Image 1 (spheres, rainbow, N blue to C red):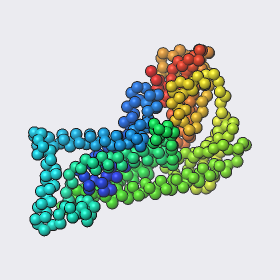
Image 2: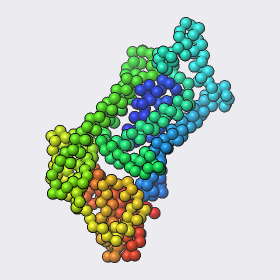
Image 3: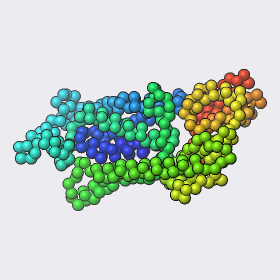
Image 4: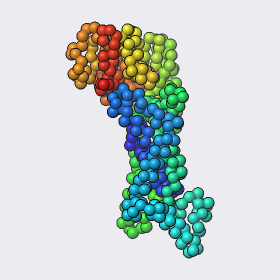
Length: 402
């Protein structure tokens, strides 16, 4: 999923009740929900390096505890910075000020006849009936950060790009294929769950009502329930779309099928079917139980050439084919890639004994899903093969790998 949805998910998770258990829960879970995407820094070494490591070790069950630990460490440093600044000088007494203040509140409440904090924890499972922020509990913060990191893995698993949760023990990519990389409905609901309590808080302050520390729990829970319902509906419609594609009559037996999600409509899917000689795409409507192959296209499987074999052995070819679920590798001859103008080091036009090999994935070939031209499919790569079958250059998404 795109980054903002991850941030919103982490914040809603925290407000659903985790923030009542320890200070900094909202901060930690919001950061942790997006932290796995720090692997984008690999793109500084080039597009192929970034593509190879995108959704890599930080998006695995093995790496998740360490990502959560890193987030907890950042929050701890922030906590130390805040306490030092408030105290003026670093000291153990001042560093423990939040807990001391909390214990003082407990003693005062007990003396006044109120139930002690321990009873509140036993009765309510945490701080629920008081307007008091709990002290930081670092083990809990790490655990909550881990939950937020795992929410990131779940959201990325739901779209058709996929991830490798068991890497490095199992390098296979897994994807649920039910949610587009940006889902407007999910985005709006999560955003409203965070914004609406703040708006109601403004209204309360206008009439002089007491400010609540833990505001918006009901909104956050409702938003998360909506996401769960959305996933349930989309999963059911995805299975129907797959069944419609399998029942579609083509000129050859169908080897496998896929159904890719649309951005908004859960009843509209981009269908793919593979036969021995070609791929057939189609627009699938589960609302009408229809498969429109006229709205799709036939992609014949390109022949294997010496140039395509050389390109598949390149760094880009290895990384791309490891990730792609519906790859098409095409020898374009000496026809340049669409972004060749951005590569002044290459001869223009290309010599006749050069070959441009294109890598693309049919999952991302729907014009309805991407605003694109047919000359530049999204998530595509090109490898330039010289006269001796050597790799002259590699491009991914219009950027050259130096």
